[in-house]
Image (cartoon, rainbow, N blue to C red):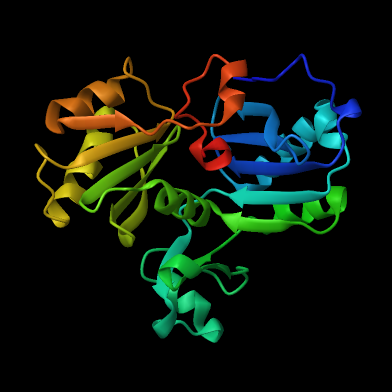
Length: 273
């Protein structure tokens, strides 16, 4: 899949900000114009087969940069979003910046050579500790110079906290090609954030029901909001609805969706508002 706003000439529009998101399954970017205060460009590259290593991912990203002229423009700022499951949330009261690897060791295999960093979630008084793809960061630095980067959990949680208006326990599920991010909020409190890999609709539903059971969510009552690569017609949605009855899509108000034939709940991490 490769979607672009072909009617736009970025050469005539200045003061743009670039946002990039990538994982082993794909690469996306959007361009935000500070004058109009709108996203004015979006492009998505879905890889036919997942890149099995960060090294293979870099080769694909290098290819994209060589062929996509929009990425060769000048930008006033750049934000990079690393999407992977190599992360852990830690409350500030337990956080020690000299022991980052120890927080990940519970669910991620780390090596002494891994570069580990963290984002600050001020609204949760917590840190999101993660392993970024350093080789991708180095390549982007060669192209752009300094930029800001974050883990996708950080961006997803921050956006959901702004959108969530319910005081009841609410499940949000961001769907990617081979993973799902499950976030459960109760008012302004985060109850859970985790990423799971799936290969079938049965895997997908299992994780939804597993989290619901662990947090004592009644499948007949709690609301579930989907974002990402899922529609009413997909087997993932149909299977989910067999077990969970209050299922919705978290629609974005971003005007850029009117330029594309894609659902307004798609690409929430990059474009959701």
